[in-house]
Each structure stands twice: as C-alpha cells, then as structure tokens.
Image (cartoon, rainbow, N blue to C red; front, side, top):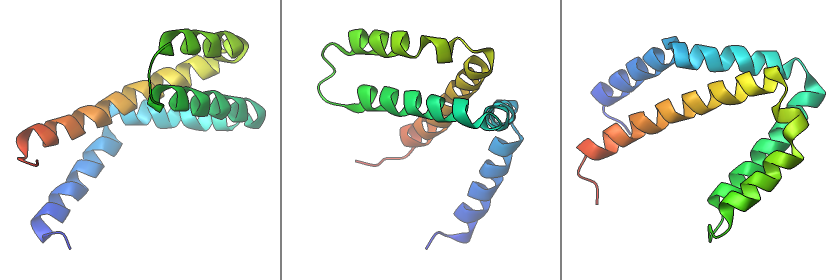
Amino acid sequence: MLEKAITDITSELIEKVKASSTYNEYVKHLYRIKGEQELYGKVNEYRRKNYILQTEEPAEGLMEKIDRLEEEYEPIIDNPLVRDFLRAELAFCRMMQEINRMIAREVDFQ
C-alpha cells in the first residue's frame, strides 16, 4: 500500500498531466479520430504494427521495415486527421517518458 503522502502527490501529478496542453491536445485529436470508426481502426492497425516493429528483437533492418510500413500506410498517414493525432500522441508519449526518466534518475533503484 502506498504511503498517503505518495498517493497525494501522485494524484496531484495526474491532475497536472491532465491539465497540460500536451495531454489536452492528444485527447482532442483522439476524440476527433475516434469519430471516424473505419479510419480509427486502420490507424490502430498501423500503430500496432509499428509498436511490434520497434519492440521486437533484434532491431536489425528496423529502418527498412519501418519505411515499408509507412509506405503501406501512406494513404492513411497522409490524412491530416491522422497526422495530427499521431503527432499529438507522440508528444504525449514523450512527456510521459520524460516524467518516468526524471523519477528514475532521482531514485536509487538497482
């Protein structure tokens, strides 16, 4: 069980994240793209394949595989609605990664 002070500060961090322009931009574009069910399905398919490529071992030939995936999904990725969503998603993911990196840097966890 988390100590109350940690729970309180975590709740505060969550509220700050949710109030950030980065998160709100992501949510705005998420709801826009979700309004286009078929397009949203294709975007999720692209995102799933991209994630698998970037997390599989080994990473040999990764750039070529990503290039092929982007060529395959070019008509989808070129859609301004999709482009805006993917850009907002990436910015939000980077923000969350930086938060995690900052915590990990300051905590002696081996």
